[in-house]
Image 1 (spheres, one colour):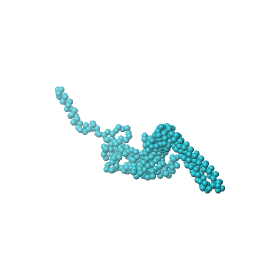
Image 2 (cartoon, one colour):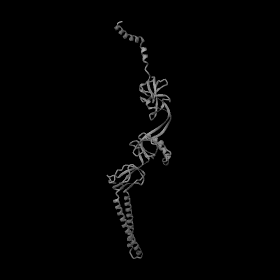
Image 3 (cartoon, one colour):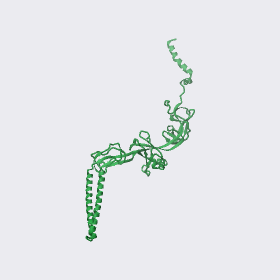
Image 4 (tube, one colour):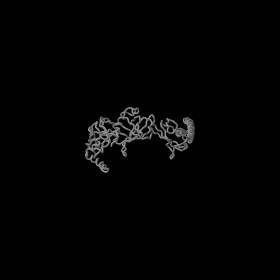
Length: 391
């Protein structure tokens, strides 16, 4: 056979072989398409706690402004900013010289008034027996009595002037009114203070143990709080609440998502709903013995108000909505997809309560919902498993 004929035979033989095998043989060699992979989650039945979370701001149990009640030049600052001070500690000293001069002046006026009173008493003591002997007129006696009364009143006025001067002099030394954390000073030694536009409030002293959190809630949340926390705490009493007894506990969540290790209680509330904002303001108190919390921090207050017992719960990702109806896709024991309409209950975290339409231990699709249809056979993959992602 020639070389040309051999090449032609090599080209024709494979084609004849494939034709003889037929199309069914070729499809079987490639294999059928695998079922669609979907992520599924088991329907759980459990107790579900219901919370409301409120954003608030921390503030001291007492936030006391340190106010200059005397005008003058600030002579000294006797504390370290950002530290804790004790009640009675000296904080600031204002130049006392003008107030000392006023005190000396008031004391001299008091001495003069006392001298006038002594003279008036002496005159009255001399004239009174003479008047009884008719040696002087009744008019002279009345004048002596009036002068003695006026001198006595003058002494009382001068004593009040001395007291006032001493009080004003005491204002030149500013002492801590409470134990607490003192902040950054608004005036330094050498500045004139006590009169606008110069600083009048020099600093703020805060009692941070316990610390309070002030937050506002909606009218609906107010009704929940009123039926649970406010009523329970009122029944417990303020004294018992201060000792950690009675009432309902609140959880404080900090900016780093950690929970404050001490729980708190509602201690104060406004008297009315704010009509401008439609909110109600509440304050809660939390122990702060390690002084971790400072005034001005943002925090969330979590309040447990109810527990639903033995309810059906699924991930929110399993829910789809169509024309106002909510449904989920269920995978049965034969890996076949079915669609169910469900009635939704409260949300809790990433889950949602199903009031009707599902039973415990069923499997619902949480990823791949857009690709499935009722009656389709799928390959379920448990959510959170180490299996590779969906194709």
